[in-house]
Image (cartoon, rainbow, N blue to C red):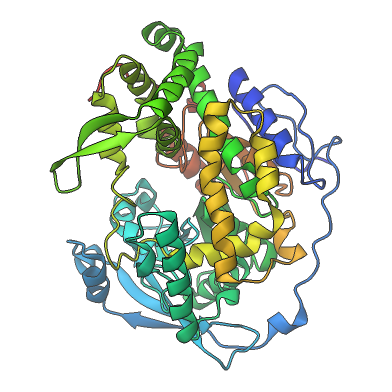
Length: 543
């Protein structure tokens, strides 16, 4: 029976629909419990209609994880955060308040070690703000929400809502920190493996239990935070890995959750590393074909896909050297092979504002010009290590990433399966994109974490109103994963940003408008007509 709210609403151009269907079928190849999605016109028919196989029952959490414990809040001076973040903001003038959530590291042993989760509460600009704040769940896993506080201070969502940021256990300014400073200066695979082992050994000496740094533990932290803040209701906004965390909250303890926004969904029941190279390759193909289907782009950059593959072959034989400004503004020489360029394009597809310049870059490079290539390098930080990375940088906690991914994903994927799924990609794409997958599988044994349980990997079922957003060219959490996430979310709406990359809520005014409308009334389908006028934008000259 169809519930009163549409399960998923999609506004898809025909080419995008074909991409989503192909991606969904690939994603479901080794996930028998998921449904096949039949071709449909937009808006889509209810996802869990008559063609859907029933979702399996989710087992109850084991009793040993329900031990009594007391989490609590501690206030702190925001000055401490400013010093650690190196930000020039007057948080006091803005009315931001700061603190820590203190909770057991291992909830099955509540008398043991504790974690301290740093949080900042940013007030609404409204004199009469909504009573239900937004709690932001950052991505990664391992990303720091507090390092993005300046962006959230400028967010249009503050027009009506208080925004609560917190650094998940092991990340950012929370303690203990699972940041691996040992890995930040590693320049090759051998050095990376040695640095990972050194970080693991240091954390073991500090008696950090990596087996309790995962999505289930994070979700329990979120439930404690909601309870301790004392609000009747809150809204959850997750981006990328933050969407997996939000779904874990819906699965484990959704008390007080009024609504959820999943931006770039990462459902717990996908096999991410089987699909990683395939998804990135399909996103590159979709972007190239998006240009070919746009008359102006096709006229400006004819035969772009064919020229791209020839260019990759040429660069693999003879990499190109070019000058680019580093982070200090000094000109340095960079080298790019064909495989390098494939991986860089995959990275650039994360950023909606950069996608439009990729066809121009390919066209220029094919003609021996490098201005657009230099521009993309400089705008994205490509070639200079992690953007913004520095010794002791806490914006990305590597051990937290591996603690989660090596538990929740690595046991359910293999390198052979990843190769098999990527086999139908053009040869210029598959081997280049499989390199990082192989590196992941080789690093996971270092961290020695237990495999996720069946419950942790099961599809999430919930009737909490949910808005699902995806980007058409997202190379890491493809639109098909939005469909997969929606299967068990009976009161959900799903929208795709044409030409969008990864993390799209603030990538266009339209997506922000849809999000605000949803938050205003999560039980009513938001007005998404603004999507009808959007098409992928391609640039024909540099800014």
